[in-house]
Length: 446
Image 1 (tube, rainbow, N blue to C red):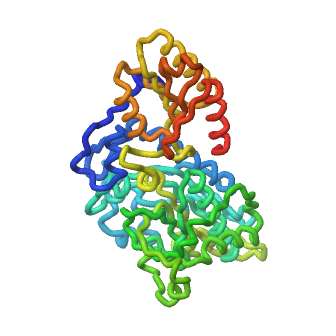
Image 2 (spheres, helix red, strand yellow; image 1 turned 135 degrees about the vertical axis):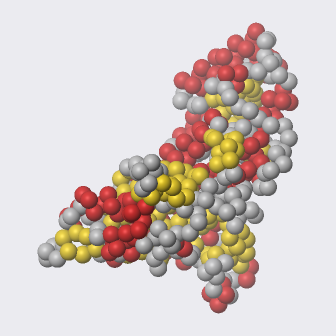
């Protein structure tokens, strides 16, 4: 994409309404525009990152054996009355009436609707286990929306729901989700720590939040400093192998990690003093096992091998897709702007022409731009007739992981400059070598 043909409304000054880094940088980088309190339009740059995050979530859910579908944003209130949550959920639920005076709501979550879908089509234990999920916009009428997409009213969320015959099966689904989430966050360049948490209005006895450590996190967290060093890395995971999946979950939850709601000072005291840490965390996902809470009240039952009929065991599992974008910025920025990890960057590389209008430099940039595209690299080419400082500032602000700079002096020596946004280090090499280096880098993030 040529920048002269792109819509990138960057701001030079910090917006007064932005209280945290991610909100400020998203506004400055032209990623979002507020339309109402807690409601945003996603401009092209922000939308590209959002779709990349969404794609990673889809890939890892499908890898774990989960089946995608799509449910509507509006839900009939009668389903929520069946489960008993319609009156209990509180003022965060946006309740509306259609033209026939029927009670509707803008879905804050989908336990009731997915249970209705299941009970309408599944009758036998032979169809289990089953996990269905979707990525859809949700609405919760926050009393005080703030921090940009971190605590908005409208948000994009992946929510999945498992249906199993036994509690043992459902707990395997719980563990399977924990592992798939760990891999999802790692692919985005994030360390998200699973911490036992409160289940809130979803219900159930077993739940873990996934928190990214950041100063702006809403939860106080107590943790063993060795926890963030845990990585899945390249290890293969057989999601049908219950023992292997449970072993990974145990590995990631054995070291102490608790929110302020679940902190146990006695357990924390057992952590070696040099490893005890207190910080703040941003919640980016949560998994729940809640048994038959919804299946009993809504009649979601299956016939068992002995011919009896039992309510299915269930759990729900959410990832805040739009919230993740804010968390990524909170964890990856400096005083110049955003620093995107390669897995979620809106463009793989920025191409800067230092002397727009110079015949030789223009020709070299055009050739390099085509070569990058042919190699499968998504490139933002700054072809504006502007000074070099302004071009560098824009690239630093929007945070592309790599930048190739082309100018007359380098071309005279047969080289371009490849710069890492994260380290700031620059290396001179031929244009072809730069392309090959970037191809190698991004191959590791596929």
